[in-house]
Length: 84
Image (cartoon, rainbow, N blue to C red; front, side, top):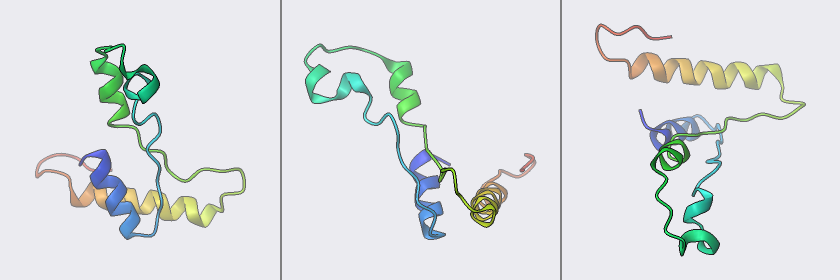
């Protein structure tokens, strides 16, 4: 499951996520003209997904997010592979 697929599936569960470090700095207008080739940076930027997190996040929300991800992992695990 890709980062974007996971984000969409979590949004279906009313769980908002954010893409951080996207687009990577070297692809933003100010730096793009330098033409940097940073494939590792791009791969990381394409895979990072930030889940809800803040100081007063209720325990029930933590359990909701964890349960949703666990359910998605079980649903999307290939046969013979071990899910969470």
